[in-house]
Image (cartoon, rainbow, N blue to C red; front, side):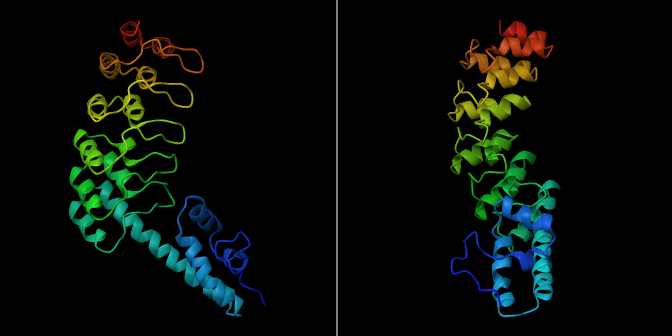
Length: 254
């Protein structure tokens, strides 16, 4: 008979009997992406297995519960994608908004910020969505924002304007890379640092130049971005623009 370890968080927890009946990729994905639900399910049924309850039956029940939870999460994410405010409101009455879906490691608030729906962002914040929760890349919902009003709502709710992702990118760098000039302007107004660099030494101006976003590059240069900043390849923003074939941006940044 297997003995259950005393420490539920110990690496010695024997998930083998349960793991054999779960869909392996789903279970590993849950654990990898930080969800506690797979661990909770496995720990819940571990005791039954230790007492001799058939592993296959208990694991099947756990897997069914796992799949039901995933379906409920996907319904909320789909409602956000469809900008269905009424359905989002209904689902938030029965669903905590602080979760990841195993298919795409981001929270509902990340998705709502990207979709630019102010009403749904407000609904999620009212439901207790964590404002600085990070996704699989270490980015917060503010990194995803595509609308100026969404930026204002997130910052007013406590979003960190200069939060660094795993690759040291800030929300301003993401806005610059996507050519979201008005979002970049709003972020600067909210206190975003213009002259900062990510892991590769690229500044927001480098990011705008990389994709040839003329208006965004113009705004950043007027906001005080250093045109002579060098990344790890010793390249200025103008050189990056030239490599991409964006002669108008290159000329602007000379």
